[in-house]
Length: 213
Image (cartoon, rainbow, N blue to C red; front, side, top):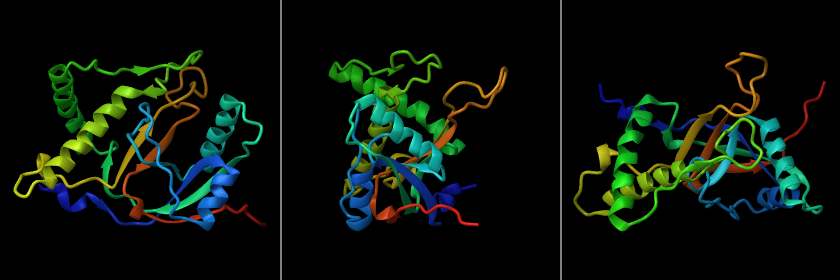
């Protein structure tokens, strides 16, 4: 069965982006001023990150950033994001997870050919959970995959890698943090994270409201 007709995800979704209050307010009033993340350790490659339907996790991330940076002017806040996944590289989908092993092999060959040291995923200092929070290998492999597909699709006459089109977003399920109780398979900071590459997938921003009785 050809599953390609199910690759596009057109439904509207809600996500949350942890940030400084000034950044939140600026994006609500000027929604085209989107700043993408391009760090070498980004978990899902480069783009605009949101926590899928997870306000509390976004807020905790913003609070942790304030603590890390020691910036007293930073006010931890949460930006609401309305978006679609579009053509999504979804790592909860077996079609894509099994594909990434082959991509890794190609990336490793590429690094060897140009004399580049293969990056690794690393723990941050004092992380007792060993969550590999600095994911330089994953980021590099994912970006290599995106670039490979884009390069093939840019040629006038070519068969793209496995017939894939450029991805609009990347989505992953992550187990993070300590077990919620002894022997648990559930981790405290489990979450679904989304990296939006195509800004047109973002339909708007909002300041989340509190529930009323």
